[in-house]
Image 1 (cartoon, rainbow, N blue to C red):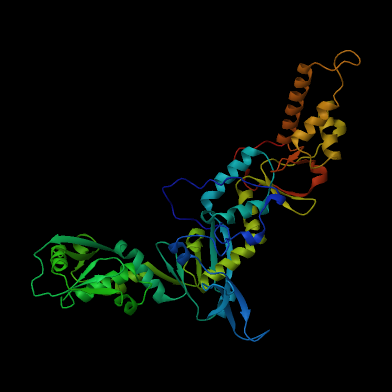
Image 2: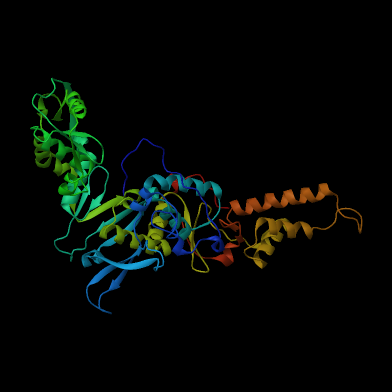
Length: 471
């Protein structure tokens, strides 16, 4: 299991929100990150529409073979036309298909969940638990490896936030935009305003920040700083086109007042600190001395689910989404990892007669009804004859067939019925706690002798969470 970085916030607590099969949404309604798909005409703000990833499908060019391309459904705005057209976007990197990808449970969520399972005493489908982990980005990690046969291939991962890139330049731009201030401290000090004759001032058309006159010696440095730290995902030339030149004496004076606060860039502390007065010098130093710690080049990465969900649209995100979708539909690999993890945490797993694997804190322990007292035998006989019945159904049948306690032909007193029901509940609870009856997460019950094919015991009972002892 991969250890996540220590954090001050509380450990994850997973809600055991299982629903019966008939109540689940079909796979097409589930999307990467636990959200839901929506209709194309869903009314959202322009920012939401810009951030939404288009739905992609793989298509082969020229029938059964040839180079793969992505086909995107693009909405049309013209009235009277078909709502969608086909748009061919960039070719798929065939090497990505060879990547080995697996989903790992987030360690902070395992122990709380194991404790909750232990306290419930019920048996939970391992596939349901795995699906629950995959439904919340904070509950899983994604491990991606480049196989040995894939040559000249590397990932570039941000050491701070763990975001992964396929291109080094994109990773460097990310480091500048998101984590430059982790390595460099900006120090402001009061100085005299700039001297000179200025007839205009440039303003960032995106942020509204004044950049300075075009003939000011620090103008290009300011443009580079704003671009690097705020709009690194935009080409520099495209950003320059968003700069406005304004002839306004009032704005020129405003810029001069702002320039009273001169910024210097400091790397390190104490006597070892290195200080620069120009951003271009700080950028060179960052590239030469800090990038090696900010960006790691590797062939194997582990990325938090929340980080993967926030990846920019592109080839890597699509590969992750496809893998997540496959694992969500049939979480076999994650289930195997969870089974081993739960056994180390003191829980037991068993394979039901139908082939499904369940996890529980109670060791299933079949009991011979012939050696049980009358009340216990009644419970075992009914569950054996009606496997899958619930507590309510079982109690309703047992109370209804209870013999009258008064004279012949007279209904038993209500107090007697309540006493009988209370005794049956106590006996049933004892049977569940001792493992003689299995109670599943949906409330249905079964007898171990007929419901279980194989039991795997916990590996480390000394460190296990509190659970019922075997009877």
